[in-house]
Image (cartoon, rainbow, N blue to C red):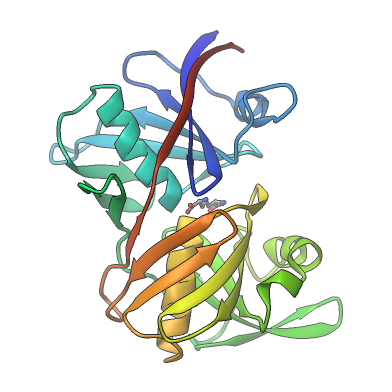
Length: 276
Ligand SMILES: N[C@H](CCC[C@H](N)C(=O)O)C(=O)O
């Protein structure tokens, strides 16, 4: 199968973007893993597929696959790159897009300063909807890992996130603790793991060990989850600049039941073809 693709990234969280409208795609988990492989394929954190919408008021549908081949519900950096991709491929002339994802509808806005703003929807905090094994909803939960108890918060942005507060992200045990929390039995669908350092009520630093990928240079849904957790604990105000290893995302959230808005760049690196 010969596939045309675009290689893109959002602050270094990189993607293989596929137009599933102009070309018929049959992508098994094995083919996704092959595409994502940084030695034998194109190499990326996630593979994103553009499809025609299934509901009348949506402009497109977009599907997200982690490098391990698993399909997931949401991808914030990917949503920004998606908006740039469909414009550059002339699949639309619009600057405001309504897009179906497995997590629900996303509103994407291409801004004049070349960034993309995404209404990521409202966070979900009920444990069983995250999903996370807990009797009642709380701001924080004790999580035992190898006999040590860590304090986490749990939230869904359509995809599950655990957030831990740390004093210094550079010294955070991302590689060692990340996979153990990702695969913790209290997260039946595994989980993305954020390490969050609050610098002020308007600035924070974040590293994310992503479900199905490992540590990425940025994670949009992770930044949204971190904002929600910090805001609920009254550590930040409604607008937060989050510094990730790959760069800065601006997140706005005015409180429970309200949507989280994420704004940042989306970059096209090159276009290519691959034979799978
Ligand atoms: N990098 C993506 C998150 C992908 C989440 C994926 N790792 C999952 O399993 O939910 C983002 O910018 O939101």
